[in-house]
Image (cartoon, rainbow, N blue to C red; front, side):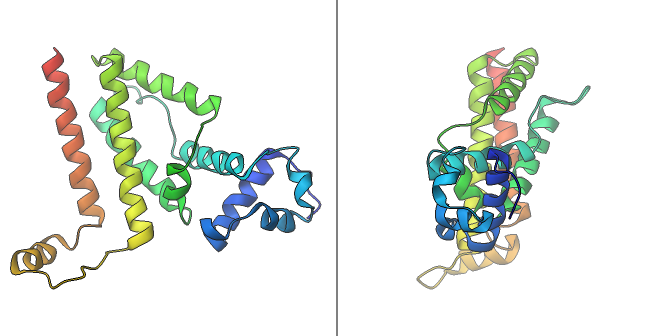
Amino acid sequence: MNKKLTRQLLVETGLRLLDETGLDGLTVRRLAAELGVQSPALYWHIKTKQELLDGMADAIVLAAGMGPPKPGESWQDWLTRRARAYRRSLKSHRDGARVVAGATSLSQEALDLFEEELDAMVAAGFTPGLALRTISAVSHYTVGVVLREQTEGQGHWAGTPGPTLRAAVAEAGGALNEAAFEHGLLALVDGTAQALANTS
């Protein structure tokens, strides 16, 4: 590959390799080979593999479309839309949730957008702490759900499910599906509305 090496190129190539090999198969050596260079050439742009993974996580997070609510959009609708977009972005890459869960830092761009989100929630009546806890809870929930989806699929029980569990699975279609995600998200939004009312 003859493209000029940049940090963005390394991150984009890393994401492409992630889809091909999974997180366990992604190495700096493999990335260098894909770019047609020796590994030391990459260290002008990334110092460690963790720095590469942080850049990849940042790209996944930003691709979800961070930022405050649209004009006239309620905080409930915004938070729901944000969570759904975040889930889609995490699922758009193999092991995307593992990459984001293991990130140690985010870019200034992501932090600035997060600040705008917090400001919007404060303007909607949240305290700064409640705004932070709310966004963090929804983000962590979403990453956790996708992590399970990407690592365990529908999952299996070691023993024999009892009649109530069998009935529950038949009714709900399993614990990892769209309806299950929406149920948890609604519970978080409704719980936040109650917490917000309690601060008034």
